[in-house]
Structures are given as structure tokens and as C-alpha cells.
Length: 262
Image (cartoon, rainbow, N blue to C red):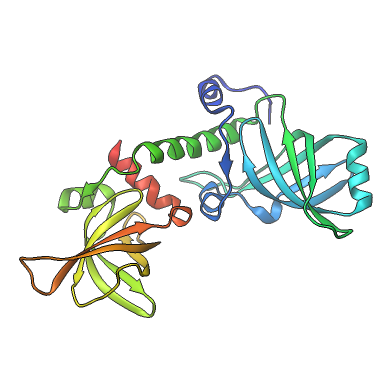
């Protein structure tokens, strides 16, 4: 893969050049990166590593190194990072490649001889087009999510269709109890649902199960009930406000909301 940026990716590269992505579990899943095939390479040696953060200009990885291996890396600050991905939608064709980096910082995070280290790696030229597109897409969603965090969508037959919901009905799991409920409105950070009023679930941790189509799937979103208000017109029903746990919001859910709001 070439270090030259294709013309259609130049604007993406310049726009997000210094923005950074934290590779949480959600981002790892949505990016399609295959962590077990991520390697730091120097000469004839390679080490499995874990990506922590990434930008267009560098990455931070965690890797286990012995004293001898640290010395070997110190002799040459030039390394390569071997990436492997499941591929992009809709075909998910696997792709793998190596990118040259320069070690700018090596931090020991353990006192053991075979220790875990955090390496900060910099790249002087733009990364391959695949990474520019991938990082650009992730950063765009990250930016839009901040801007649209409080934008709420009332759920009716039309918005349910646009969102790809199989039904406005959903399920809420609190502990071992799973109950049917209905979506009233939804946002990137939470939702309001209608459920039986006898449930005392305020401040309880819950899991919301939403059923989507194309493809048919159940998306689980972890959160907490922040309010529960009885509905005057219906003695046995209440409206519950659920605040999602930010770090555990599925990427596919976020994508669907953005698609609806665009």
C-alpha cells in the first residue's frame, strides 16, 4: 500500500489529521480490527500488541517486552505495525498490511523483567488509504455524536421504519427480570420507554434490547434508569428515562441514529 494519499482522501486526512480515537471494545468491534493479528515488527522479530489509541499521525500500543527486546528496539527506532481487518461493509473482504512507524516514547508499566510497555509511534507520511477512510469514518461519527448527543427522535411508524426497527416494542432487563416495553423516543445517549408502573427500577442498571431488521438482530444497550413517572392517562403504565452507558453504546446503534438524523 502506498504512502501517497488518493485525491478523494486528502480532505479527510487534513480534516482529522490530529484527532485521536480510543480503541474501546465498541470501536474495536466496529472497526473490524483483528487484535490477535496485530504485531509490532522490528527486523526479523515481531511481538503481538494491543492498540490503545490511534490518529492519522500515530498510534499507541501496549506490548510485552523483555530487557533484551527493549535494548534491541532502542538500537533502531524504526518499526512496522502489522494491521489486520475483517474488511469494510458490505463485503467484509479481509485486508492486512504493514505501516512504518517511528518510536517516539517507550514507557515501562511494570517492574517485571518481561514487562508490559506502552509505545508511542509516529508516522511522518499519511497512512494507507484504508486507514484514512476507516479513521475518518470513526472520527466523523465521534464528532457528530458530540453535536447530536441530546437530539431526540419521537418513535412512530415512520421513524421506526427509517431507523430500521422491526418493531417499536423492545425489552428491558433489570437483574434477572426481563419485561416488555415500548420505545417512546430515542437519542444517541438514551431513550424513553413505556412500561408497567409497578416496576421500581429508578437508579437501577438495565439492559435495553432493541430489535432491528436488515439484518435482523437484537442490539443490547447498557444503561441506567434515571427517572420513572406514572402516566396519568393510564394507571398501570409509566414512562422511564434510560441513560445509556457511554462506553458501551454499540457502534451499529450509533450509525443507525446518525443515518436517521442526516
